[in-house]
Amino acid sequence: MNTAIHNGWRASVASESPRKILPLRRSYLNAIPRERVLLGSHVRRAMVISSSKKANLTASRKQRINLQSNGEKELTFSEFLKHPSGMEAVINAKALQSYQLVDDDENTYRCTLPTIQLMSFEVSPVLVLRVIPTQEDCTVELLSCKLEGSELLENQSEMFSAIMTNCMTWNMEDPEPFLEVDVSLKVTLEISTRPFTMLPVSAVESPGNLVMQTLVDTLVPLLLQQLLKDYDEWIQKQQQNLLT
Image 1 (spheres, one colour):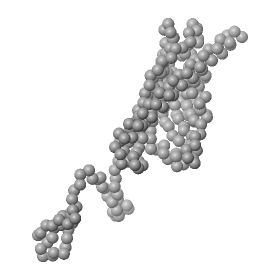
Image 2: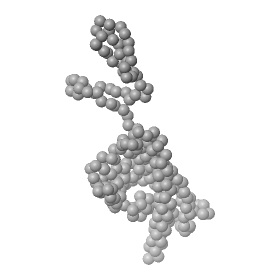
Image 3: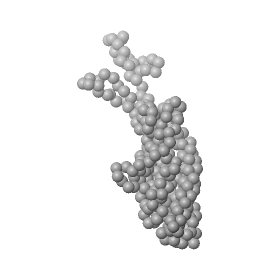
C-alpha cells in the first residue's frame, strides 16, 4: 500500500487497485463538533450543533439623599410606603403607561412602559416587579422583562434575561435623615447575529457594560429625586388633612 499527499489530503492507495482512493481528512484544531440529527427513523443529514455564546452584562450604583425632618412618627418614610402613594412612587408609576396587581398579590405589579418605535415596529416593554417593604427597608425585584407588540420583536425577548434588585434603606433617627438606594442590574444576552458571533464574548461585554453603567448612573439619581419629591408631597397632604 502506498501513501501520497494531494492538496492537503492524505490518500492511501492499494497496490492492486491503484484507482481506488480513500481520502482521510486531516484533523483541525478548534473544529466545531458535529453530531448526527435523526429525522424520523433515518439519518438524513448532519447538522452543526453548538451552544450559542452568551454575554453577561452588569452594572450597579449606591447613592444617598437627605430626607425632610418633620419630627412626626406617622410621617416617616416607612409609613409613606404603606400608603398607595408610596407604592406608586417606588415603581415610578408616573413614568408608566399602566400598571396592575398580579394575581391578587399585593406586592407584585405588572408594569407596562410607554410604547417605543424601533424602525417600523412598535413595542412596549413589560416588567413584573415585586415590592417587599418592611419597617427598616424596601426591596424591589425585577421578576421578568419582555417586549410586547410586534411579533418579530416579541421573539427577541427569548434572547435575553435580566435580574434587577433595588434595596432601599433609610434612617429617620439620624440628625440628618437619609434615604439610600443600592441598585444592581444583571443582563444575560444571547449572541446570535453576525458579526458579533465571530467576535470574542469580551468584545460584546466590554462596551455593553459601559452602556449599562451609564444607564444606571443616569437613572438612579432621577429615581431618588422623584422619590424625594413624592415623599415631600405626601407629607404636605397628610399635614393638610390633619389641619382640616
